[in-house]
Length: 433
Image 1: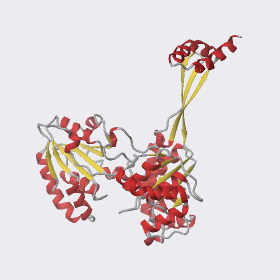
Image 2 (image 1 turned 90 degrees about the horizontal axis):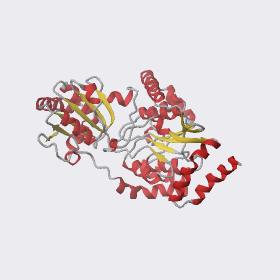
Image 3 (image 1 turned 135 degrees about the horizontal axis):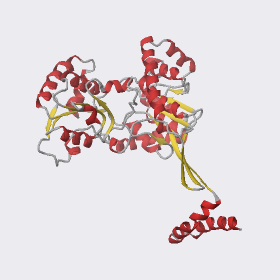
Image 4 (image 1 turned 90 degrees about the vertical axis):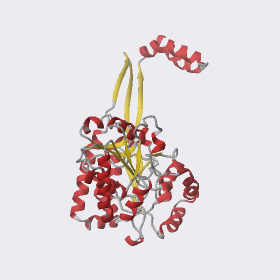
């Protein structure tokens, strides 16, 4: 069912060119969303309403979701879903808390200290998509680390839907209420990103914007970066599975189908040294795909930018998955724990046959907002540290400054910055007087 790529005997291949991945043309989308972003910057809430009517088919009288609607959504929430969200919050809070860092005081020399201090940003805007499916889990994944980091002001935006009375999906509203976030806006797409970045009437600008979205959301983030911080330009979701003959074909096929269920542009890669496993997984896909609920998008993803990749051995397979740098990587091998620790490039790694990616989407405790499109080579997933700034607190005594002054004079003189040298010397002379 999947395209088969044979990399055996091709250890010197340019692996990233061989492997499929959906194209995310953010540059092209930038020009499409630029008028929307600049309109919100220049005309505020009126431009937000106009864009919402144009793209979502919703006429907004008020951008903010009434608190009563949040409360009603929580009251109506299925108890089983509420219990699951509460447990997801508990687990994510535990992991996010472990990501916090204490201030570190470094004594450079006697009388000279540099304290590395971590400070939360003041205000964040969290985006929760509302495209093919609703993601109350994304409310948890964005809001919990921000709250743990100590951010004082949180706002959430999610697209309005006519079928929900021109409000976001009730599951999203219930998750917001459960977390105590009551500043929620029925705004989606590029206009939501611009609203957070520039501020509009009744909505203060934010310091950082996080959360996944489509290519237009990614393009809007690119345009406002620098005005505020962003987490990433997230693209279509993806999974790589590094497996050997010990993997259970039905489980591997189920994980490929689960990832393809997200989006027709989802990318799914199975990398193995076992021809038998590939054949068995193909047979399982033949059984599972026809009966899955979202068959059309699953078939599109598997036929489009997905593949079976045959490698010489598992070390070769590790080279392949590291080159592809997947958002999600499953390692299902006889030595899975040890091999997983050798992975260098992945948003998150799921170890062994009982740790599927779908667990990470909801209740593993890890965050599901992860780098896509190969950006795991140089970036990380969302965490409490995404909402923290590092500041250095520098303190020198008169004696410590006097001791280092000759070095400052030498370097300042080499750079012909004589005022820099004098700013130190004036203090040294005063201390010696």
